[in-house]
Image (tube, rainbow over all chains, first blue to last red):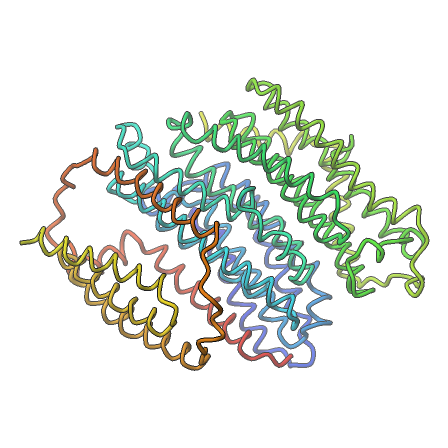
Length: 471
Length: 163
């Protein structure tokens, strides 16, 4: 089977969505979301059935274990993202929902290609294919805040793309070829252009995944953009940023780790501290999740900074846990926001009486984000910190444990609003949920509990992929 | 001769870029950018990339900049809307950062000081670039078409804000 099969399948589905959008009447376009979601799921299933391992285009495109693992993460996030956005799109921009799902799929295609990219131009183009639709999606709602969120995302995205491109151009100057294998050879030969190139590339990609000191855009964008889209934005593009980091730094430049690994470790420690501390005073749940997400990014970045197969494997596993947990949490926030028009902590008060099932789900996601035992997030955090311990970073493990306690404090503040407080006057009624949203939250819950109770297959696949990459 | 031309147009390109950043009036900034792009085209010619030089002038200095100017004139910014010129610590930091970064890169470039490998015979010709795009870089090239599709869909949707 040809290595590109999955990506071509996804591209065909993207074009199918385009055609279906034209065929459906303007009044009822809900069918598109079903096609888009089914398409992502079919591609996900195909990744298990078809044999797509191998390389194409002279090694520029590679489907190794890591690429396949990441592709599955992206496709699962895409399918769940479409499912979460289905009802919201139909209610708030019914005539444009075709475009919404089309753009989600094109961003998804950029990510699946990025996971396989082992050539500089290919990396840049797939990064743009991923980012460009995101800017538009952030501006879907017809409000000033949505426009502001989109503009911030766009400006930061454009600048970081340029910075990354500049860094990569220096790597090209060193290698004389755009293949990453050439960059490895140039680094081995001690070409002096490699170091500035990788430092600038690291800064550019840092913007993309929103680690401190490049994190300023995250809370504002999350607050203003449509919440179901934020569920997707907070997980899939970040995972794609890690895909690029893995390809460029871990795969191509492991010999230079004395240069970049300390910088990454410093970045991830600062990110963990700043994200978790700034999350404490937040009263908007979306902003709180944004800052906590920054903190989680810091923990995940540790998997890159350790430069060990354990660390990388645990980063890959963390992405799965984070996918279900964070997308679930934003899905619940979206339900609340659509019902009450606000994502303030007050809107969550008394949720246990207004919709017990939803309250239970949110509690589960918060526990998983905080890393409480026997849900997905626990194993992810433990895994990363055990890998850090084995690599000799005991002080980071201690710091991580302290910050985990801090994070439990602010996550439980949300849980307390949900369970301990009375609903604010005027919001006592039951919180309604569309069928698609029920399905999405259920899937996320099953994912969080399933990965929490039975993490072994995910961990083993992730570790095997990481070992295969790092030898 | 080649070195003299490189120094001349390289300096002009840097000055043009500085003009873009420093000019208050956006129309003037755009015109500076045309100049900078033109100088870059000359640098491309000096490296034997003739097709790229032609495209740079036609597409960037020509088409794209005309659109830029159109948009700027449609926005019709007035002098008082631009706000007073201020010197802030952030700007000083940015300048210092740029200088540091420049130094960081200039030193290894100076040390490297190597002659790059000789270019293949068809380098920079229409045929050579065409072969590269449709053979080595076919996949990114095809992806660009999807990227443009997504960009067009997005642009139309944002421009047509009727729900």
